[in-house]
Structures are given as C-alpha cells and as structure tokens.
Figure (cartoon, rainbow, N blue to C red):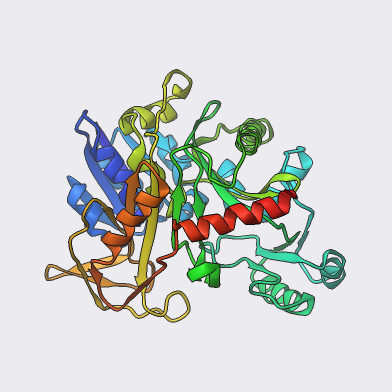
Length: 434
C-alpha cells in the first residue's frame, strides 16, 4: 500500500512512524513545506511544497498512484484538500472543509454548539465590530478573547493570564477585530485535558486522555506556545479526572460528529480533537480541532497497538465500527525542545546536536538539515517521548533523553513531574469542593 502523509511537523513524524511500524510494510510518501529529517528517512519519496497548494499536492498524489492520504495540519483542511482528494478518487483521512470548519472558524463552532444544544458550551458572544463589545466584557468580567480564525494555538488571550483587566481585554479584542470576527467567552476555571478520536463518519475510536502544557516556562508561566509538552496515564484518564468526566467528554464528541452530518450533510472522517476543561460543573469545551494535536499525537500514536494501516483504511472506508482499536496501557511524557527565546524572539539557524536518547523516542518538528547537521528554525525544534508503566518512570526517560540534546535551546523540565501533577490534582479537588 502507498500512503501519503501531508505535513512536516512533529505530529506528522509521529503519524509516519506509526505507519512505518505496520507489518504490511507500506510505502510512505510525504508532502511537506519544509523537509523534516525524520519523515524523509521513512519515505520512499517526498515533495517539498506548501501543503495548501492543492493542485500540486493532488497531482503528486495521482502521479504516484497513492492508495490513501492522511492529513496532519489544519491549514490544508481549511482550504479543502480533503474535498479535492475525494474528487480525484483518493481515499483520505481528514475531514472535508464543510466539517473541518469546526476548527478553523471558532465563531461558527460556538454557534453550531449553541444552536444544536451540544453540551459543554460556555457563555459567549461573537463580534464582527465593537458594538456592545465593552459592555459584554464588563458583564462577564473574567473573559477569554479568541480570534475566530486559525492562529496556531497562540491567538487566544485570557484575563488573569495574558490580560490584566477588562480594559486590556477590550483593547486586545478591538485589535483582533481588524483581522476578522472575535469570540468573547466566559473564562472557565479548572484543568484542561485533550480527548482525541479516530472517526469514520459514524463511529469513534478514542485514544487515552492527554494534558498539554502551552505555557513557555516552568509552572505554567509565560506566553502561550504551540505546546511545550504533554503527558498521558496508563489508566486512560488523567490523575485529576474521574471516570464520569471521560464519559461526558465522549458523549459530547459523539453528539458533535452526528450533528455535523445532520447540519452539513457531510460525514466527518478523520481525527476529532476535543479540548476540554474540567470545571466544578463538569467538562466544558474549549475548542475542537479537526486533526491530531501537536504534541498530543506523540503521546498516543507510539502506544497504538492496532496496525495504523488498518485504522487508516477503516476511517477512509467507514469500517471503524468493526475494528478493535487498542492502545497499550502505558503512561507517556512528551517534552519539546525549542529555540532560545521562543516564542517571542526565537533564535533560529543554530546547530542542534542529538546525543544518546536512551529509551526515549525522538520526533523532529521544525528543523532543517544541511551538510549532515541539524539546525533550528523559529518554531519548536523536536520532541522527546518517554513511555513506561507510570508517569513518573516515563518522565524520567523523557528527561534523560532531552538532557542529551545540545544547543542554544530551552525546554520545560517540570512536565510530567510528580510535583506538577500533584498541583493539578489539588487544584481539581479545590474546584470540586473536596
């Protein structure tokens, strides 16, 4: 089988690795805007081209007689690459534009939730100009300001974190209005978790829950990033969660998939990513993404026990209901190494030396190779993943691996540590009132 991977980041490296593990020995092809050394080494062939250049991507796919494609990043989904693949008769893992909209149009996504009584929707309002904007912010007091379009995980600002008061929230919202619609939401208090699922249009196969850490610095301080690292537990849920929390989140995602088809007439086929926050009133939806998370893909794909080729085939052909998708009962910890100064003023074009990773797995993200050496760009460089029976052991493996990466770099050593997880557990106990 010939499989095409769209995208060249850490998430796509994890996807390619999972495909390469298949006993069916598939041939891997890739389209990536920048060459990822890890993906390139797994490929029979690859095309260096913007993933949003639909005409070139489809031409490359058909000329290589690709059997199935899987789309990693959100940008090609937002321009309708899945639609074009289907028109060309190419099976694809990645939702069509009409339903992928749940990620790239936050205003539409919130209205969709409200209009169809999808559980977990916070109080919000969509603004296309500043009429009533200040009054609504003053009414809610604690708010999150979200540009409606794609921002690479860095456009959302929250009061008490990046915004000092309602006036700052208003000024930031006005600034964002110059680029398009803005969603103002109530600020939700609690602990975040990610639930990802394979979807074939009707059936969902869920991966273990993951908690991502978006803040740049230790103890969840500093500016938001694309994600500095993440962890999952051997128990499917996270240490601060209850079994009921997971069931509610699953129900919301199933309801979302069904309602998307009812509303748009289009089946959702691909990956659905639910970003939730556990509040005193249960799980609420922060956002949906129409693809794997980065770094969350790197937690769940290495422990996928079912053949990734079988999963891809089941999604593309609507057969997920008859496939038993299994993940190993292992804990994982992922830590990203990033250029010094990231995200505000990253130091690019510096050499990175990767030493002995020990038992950790290395995923390249945004780097480039020249004369046999690896260099930084302005984005996250590479991720190191530890897998073990407990989070504590997985964290140790990841930490030992990342300590053997040399360069002008930064990473968070606290992700997955007992101290940080204990803090999360205590935070949820306080919120739940026990």
